[in-house]
Length: 142
Image (cartoon, rainbow, N blue to C red; front, side, top):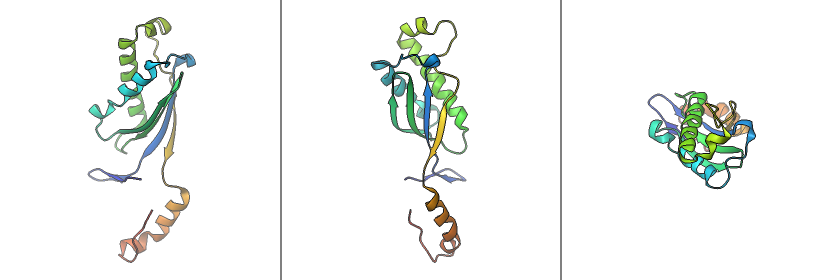
């Protein structure tokens, strides 16, 4: 577990993000899914504090472990990932224009997001010991 710092915040904000293709069409076969994940890693060019850890593409959905700083809304980052990857995929794989005709997007509208982090017992122990740590009496270990 790695705590990250910004000017006025220390955070550990990792998420498990899943989103699927529109109509659950199995278009992420072969190199298409791998290319989608590659383009999503470019998020760091625009949002350098956002990092993608583990990632996997199935035929009709992707899984990402992603760290998003608290200064960004999760929906903002998800929208960016979907938009940029869809544009790159359509540009590289012409068959997607036949599968998703017109302005129909590649990704479904929704997504699943879940936090990944320390467990409830660790948080409870941290809160209970906080006063002693601030007083220099105890050094917390996670």
